[in-house]
Image (cartoon, rainbow, N blue to C red):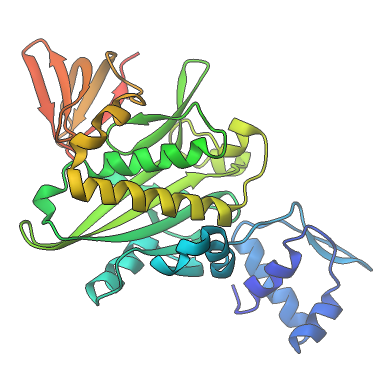
Length: 329
């Protein structure tokens, strides 16, 4: 990738043909420099057509994330948030963790058009492709310590469900503790994931770096890289989504939910979470961190956001971050 790659992609994002010669003149560079910029885009997985006499165009139009467009979509509340947009980054969570440690302001959002090493739970990598995913991290500073933040990933899930409903995605469900699912012909497919990393003291002030990845429009090539059934918003509502407007919706919903959580804890949002619980009263397998598998029946979450499971040895309680969960069917 070259410094010109994203400026050129911005021009090509309308899906129309653009002359390499004219772009070279506009940027005051050689046509070879434009070619190198196009090659950089192709290395990022972007398909670019080249036709002699017409120039270059993308196989389909592309909506890039732009700070100005996100703030415009947020509207009069935009001054409450610090928005940083990046073209390419290894991980928005890693970036924001470093910034948070250096005093980055509360309610900050870092969003990238593409992450090369996006992070998932348990060391997994979140697969990201340009124009196909919305990947961002959100910093929220709490006056409470990390010990008081039980259920945080669950309330973030609630915020995402609220945002999805505003796009007419009404079928989304929550999988404890951090996934958004869509049920399709009896198969649960992942639409979005959440990764939370905490900084600060257990009892003093703390900060949460909330990483979110959402599938907007998955290509077959990208879907093949994912190690579990996956689905995109485009498949749910059959229309393209402006990621700038969607991110603005999420930021406002996150701020509202996180303020409620800080003031009243998870218990104030528990009933809403349970109404979206994908595995309520279903037979499940629980895989612990050491690889042991426990079978049981989910009976939802308690007031702290921990999962309660009926097993042959009675009701067991599992805290967020300690287990993974899969349908046993």
